Image (cartoon, rainbow over all chains, first blue to last red; front, side):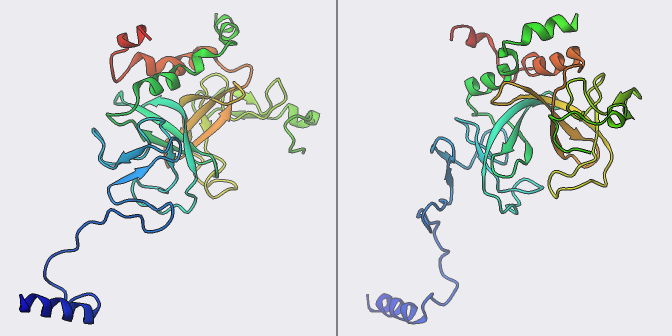
Amino acid sequence: MPRRTHDRRTRDAAGRGRGGGRRQRPKDVRHRPGGERGDAFRCVGCRLDVPLTAPGTAHRNHCPHCLAGRHVDRSTPGDRESRCRGRMTALGLSVHENGEWQLIHSCEVCGTLKPNRIAGDDNALALIRLALRPLADPRLRDRALLAL
Amino acid sequence: MSNNPNSQPSSVLRTDTFDCVRCGLTVTTHAPDGGRRHHCPSCLHSRHVTDRVAGGPSDCRARMNPIAIAVLRTGDWTVVHRCTRCRELAAGPVSGDDNQLVLMRMAVRPLAQPPFPLEAFGDI
C-alpha cells in the first residue's frame, strides 16, 4: 500500500517517528554485556534466570534457589541508589515481630547488612539449612552445659 | 590504647566499664578473652555508637536489639543487632561469658515459627 510505505519513509527520515501512534513494545535484549533483561534477572550466585514477579512480596530481592542477591538498593526497597553492586549472601535468619522469617543479607564487597523478607517460592531446603546452621555447631554441647 | 584486639590492653582499660542501656548492668569494656565487647553479656542489647554505612562514630546512640544469630565461615557465632531508632543492622562477635540461654533462644526461634510445615524434611 502506497500510504504505508510513505509513512515508513517519513519515520525513517525523522529518526524516531512523529510521536503518538503505537507504544514502544517491551524489549527482550541485553543492552550491554552482562546487562539485565526487562522482566527477569540472572542470579549472581547460581546463574539462574529469575522472573521479577515473586509470590507473597512486591520486591524480588534475592534468588529463590541460592538466596543470594545483589547490592543495588541503599535505604528503601527498589530505590537502586547503591553504587556497590556486590554480591549479597544470606548470613542468617531472624524472625520479625509478626512471625515471618527475614533473611539477613551481607554484602561481600562492602560488608553492609540488610534484612529481606523471604518470598513464597524460596527454596525451603536452603532456608532450613540456614536456620539450622547455628545448631550444627559441634561446640553446641559446651554451650548447652554452660547454660545449666 | 592498642587497636589490635589480640594484644592485652593496659590495666586501666581492663577495668573500664559501661552501663547496659536495657538492663543497667555494669559491664567491663573488655571481655575475659581479651576482645572488646559489643553488647551486654546478660541481655545481649547494645548501643548504636558506630556508623557502619558512613563510617566513624554515630549520632544515633539508641538501643540495639539482638535479632539473629549468624555463623561465620570459621564456625564462630555472631549476634546481629538492629537499632530501634534508625533500623540499621550491625554484627558483633559472641564473647565467652554471654548469656547462653538468650543466645540459644535466638538460635532456635526461626524453627519455632516456621513458615511451612517441617514434617516433610524428616524424610530427607
